[in-house]
Length: 146
Image (tube, rainbow, N blue to C red; front, side, top):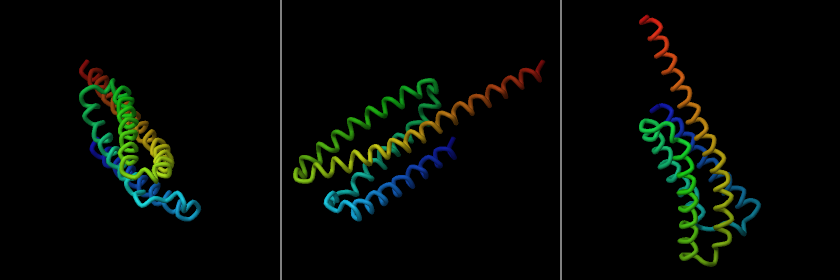
C-alpha cells in the first residue's frame, strides 16, 4: 500500500505542476488580461488538499474498506466548501480581481477533478485486487489444509 500511495503523491504532484505551468503559459500567451499575480495560490490550494485527501485513504482502507465511497463523497463535499471559503477569502482581499480569480479557479478545479477521479478509481481498483488476492490465498490455504 505504501508504494501505491507514493505513486499517487508523485502523480498528483506532477499533474499539479503540469496543469499549473500549462495553464499559466496559456493564460499569459493567449489571455493576458485574465492573469493575476496570485495565480500560484490556486495550484498550491489544490496540491495541499490533494495531499491531505490521499493521506486519508490508507487509514480508511485499514479501518473500513467498505466505506470508501462514503469517504470519497465526504472529501468532495469538503473540497467544495473549502473552495468556496477560499474564493470568499480572496474576494475580501482583492475585490478588483475576483472575477479573473474565480474563472481561473473553476478551470483548475475541473482539471483537478479529472485526475483526482483517476487517482480514486485506481485506489478502488487496488483495494479490490488486494481483497481478491487475500480471498484466493485464504481459499487456497483452506483447500491445502483439507
